[in-house]
Length: 294
Image (cartoon, rainbow, N blue to C red; front, side, top):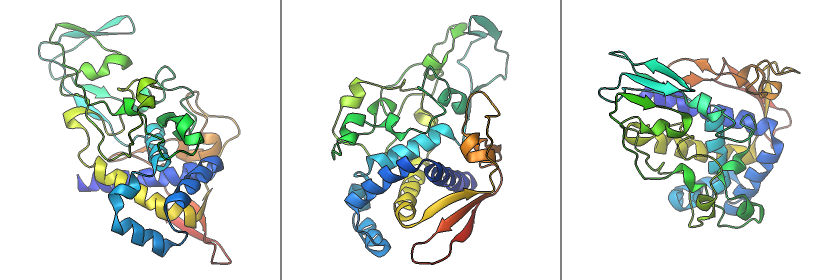
C-alpha cells in the first residue's frame, strides 16, 4: 500500500505539471487563485499553509479542479470486484455474456473517463468541468466543486440471475456504494448539483464506495500543497517527450502536446511513460535547470 500511494501521488503530480506546462491558460488561472490567497514569497506561503492548512485549501477550488481533471485524464488505478451472488450472465450493448465461477469484473476508469457520453470533449484538459463556471469566471469566492461527483447516496446490488451493466449503472455492482471524496475543497454553493455536467458515477479515479482508495485524502492534500508551492514560483517546460503532428489514436489527441506521456505505462499502478524530463526555470537564477520526475 505504501508503494502504491507513493508512486500514484508522484505520477499524478507529474501529469498535473505536464498539463499545466502545455495549457498556459489553465496555469494562469491557477496562479491567479494562488495570488488571491497566499503572499508572493515561498517562505510566507509555507508559513500560511502550516498555520491553517484546512481552511486555506478549501479556498482553492480551481486547484482542486486541476487535480480532478488530471486524474480524469490519467487515472492511476483500477478495481476488480466479484459479481453478485448467483449471477450467471449479464447484458452489455445488447449482447449477453456468461459469468462463470471465479469470474470478476474489472472497472476501467480510463475507458469511462474518455467516454464522450460521460464527459463532453473527453480528451480536452478542462478543469472547469468540475466547477460552477459562472461563479468562477466572475471571480467569486463561492466557486464550487461540482457536487454531482460526491454524492453520499448508496445504490444496492441486484441478485437476479441476469443483470444489465452499462456505464450509467456500473455502481450497481455490490460494495460500490457512492461515498464522499472527503478532502476535495467544496463551498456552500449548490448550483453545480442542480446542473450536473456528467453522471455522478462516471468519475472514479479512486474508485467509489467502501472499497475506494483509503489514501485519497492524503494523496490529494499532498498534490494540492505541491501545486501551491511549485506552480507560482517555477516555470515547467516538458522536454524529450516526442510530440506528434497527428494523433496516434482516436480517443485522444494529447500526444500532440504531451508526446509519449499521453499514454500511461502499466506498473504497480498506471504511471508515466518512462522518465519525465522538464526544464524548470527559477526566476532568481539566470539559467534554467533540468529536473527529472520519475
